[in-house]
Image (tube, rainbow, N blue to C red):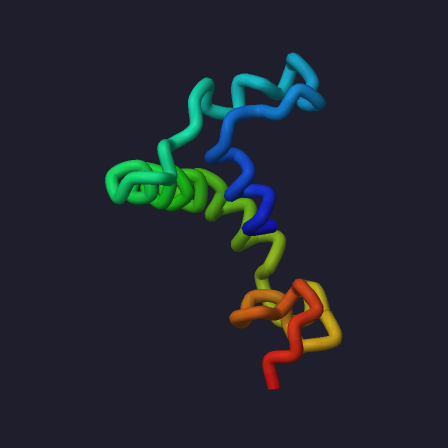
Length: 85
């Protein structure tokens, strides 16, 4: 889910339907500069704040979270098949 939210901080790709384009910024942050990276992280933080209520409802307890081979989604490396242990 965090990857989806992070995607909302980037400009929409050509494959995004017109009805969803308003969810994305028109221009992406310049990640080549310190200010641009800070702006990208600030956008991600704003998206997390906006989506927090639905995330909390969806992931209300450990039983509702996604299990991966590395454990519960949410730990460093978990959810992408990395061996964290």
